[in-house]
Length: 292
Image 1 (cartoon, rainbow, N blue to C red):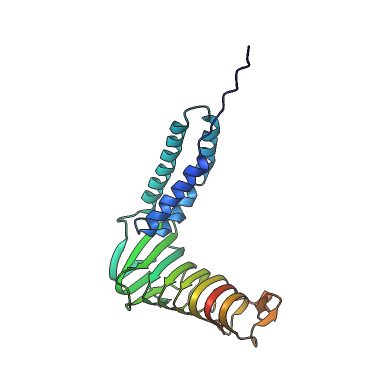
Image 2: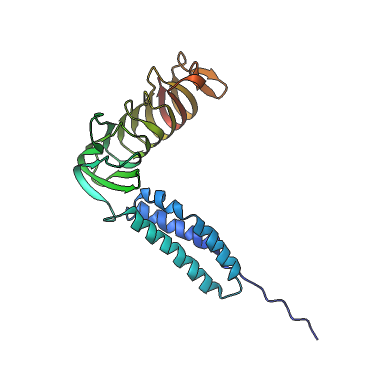
C-alpha cells in the first residue's frame, strides 16, 4: 500500500503583506493624503509585527487567504489608530498664509518640511515668544500635533503654485528641536544660530541652500544630502566641528585653517572637549559645496 504523502503546509505571505502595507502608506503620503509626520506615531505599533508573525505560525495550517485577511485587517487597524492618535483634522492639514502654534506644554519638538520651487527662510523667534512656530507667506500647509510633551510640526508648499513665492518660518529657541527638510528646485536660507538643534537633516535637490549652524546647542548631529545643488555651510566661530564630506563632480571648498584634515575627517582643534560641537556628514553630487 503506497505511503500517503505528507500534507504540505503553506504559510501566509507575511512579509509580502507587510511590504504591500508600507507601499500603500508611502503612496498616500506622497499624494498628501497622509502626513509624513505620521511615522512618529506609527512606529509605536512595532510589537504588532511580532504578533503577526506569531499568528502566521499558529494559523499556518488554516486557509492561507483567511490568515492573510486577518493580517491585513490588523495592519489596517494599526494605521487607523495611528491616524486617530495623530489627531488629523483634515488630510492635508491647515492651509494658511500666516499662522502660529503655541509652545504651551511642549518640551521638545520635531519639525518636518517639504518645499518645492519656493524661496524659504527659516530662523528663530524672539526668546520671549510664547509660540513654537510662526509662518508667513504664500499658502503653506501646516499640520501640527502634540502628544504628551512632544510637538510634531509638518510644513509643505504646494507643488504647482509655489514657484517664486517667499515663505518665512520662525521657530522657538527655547526647546530642543529635531529638523528634517526636503527642498526641490528652490532657494533655502536657514539661520539656525539661535536655535537649540539636536538633529538636522537636509535633502536638497537642484537648488540653493545657505545654512548657519547653531551657536550654543551643545551637541548637534547634521546630515546633508545634495544633488545638483549649491550648498554653503557656515559654522559659528565658537563652535567646534567634525566634518566628513563625500563629493562627486562637485566644486568643494573647506576652511582648512579652522578644520584640519585628519584621515576622512576635517576636525576643529580641541573638538573632543568643546562645549558646543557639530558632527557633520555631507554627501554632495554634482554642484558646489562650501564650508566655512
